[in-house]
Length: 327
Image 1 (spheres, rainbow, N blue to C red):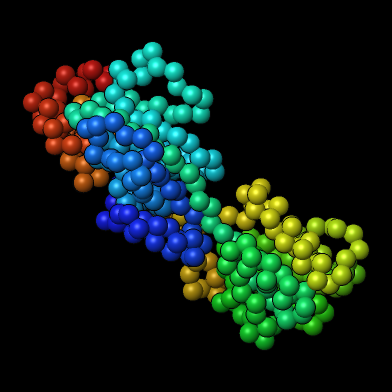
Image 2 (image 1 turned 60 degrees about the vertical axis):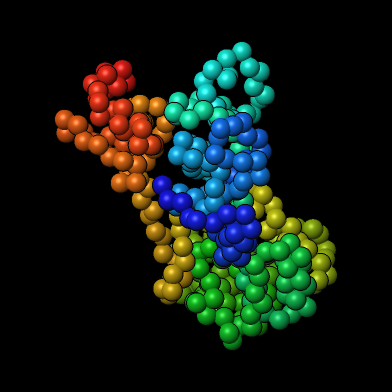
C-alpha cells in the first residue's frame, strides 16, 4: 500500500491530471463520520489502478479496506457505499441494499461511510484527415471533453497512435490505405475508416497484400459509424460519434488496467503491475498488504503483518493465541 501526501484541492488536481492522461481511477469521498475516527466528512482520496492511494480518508484500519474495495469498483465499473464500523454497530441495524458493511476490530473505535466511484478514462481519439466531416467530428468529440487530435495524413506516424487510441481515418479516398497501414500495427482500441463499402473492400485488400493478420483486419470498422441511413458528410460525424459513445458505454473503449503507453514503434507496452499480497492482521482481523510498511514479524518461519504497532505488540506477547484462534 502506498499513500501520496495530497489533500483537499490537491486531490482534485490529481484527478484532473489523471483524466487528462487518460488513466482510469477511483474517487473515494467520506460522506459520514462517527468519532473518534480520524477521517472527516468531505475527505477525499484517489486510488489508481496500481493500488496507490492519493489523499486521506482515515487511518491504518480504513486504508487497506478502501484499496481492496476500490479495486473491485474499478473492475466492476459500479459505484458503492462502504460502511466501516465496529461489529456491534451493525447488530440489529437496517442496512440499505447496495451498502457494503465492513466490521473493523481496530483498537480505535469510530465509523466511516465512504462513497467509492469509478472514473473511467476518456477515450483518446485521433482523427486523420482535414475534410469537413473530420473537422465536424473533431468539434463534436471536443464537446464531450474527450482527448482528441486532428492530424493531416502527412503528419500521421506510428508515434501518433498506440493501443489506447481510438483512430478514425477520415482522409476519404486520399490515403485511406496508408493511414490504416500506419495505425493497424499498434492494435488500437478502435480503428474506423470513413469510406463506402466498395472503397472499403479496396482498403482491406491492400492490407491483406501487405501481410497483415486476418484477425486484425477483421476488427476494422468499415464503414465507420452507426448506420443512420442516407446522411451528409457532416452528418457522418454524428454517426461515428454515436458508435464511439455506444462502444464506450459497453466498456469496449477502456484500456486494460495497469497498462501504459511507451515510445516503442508499436506505441504500447503492457506492464504487469505486481501488487503486494493481501493478508489478515490476526490481532484485529483487518486486511493489510504483506510489505515492510506493515510491521512484519516472523514467528516459527512465517511472517505476519499488522495494521498498527499495538496489534504487533499484542501478537509478540502471545503469538500462539492468535494463530490457533485463526486456525
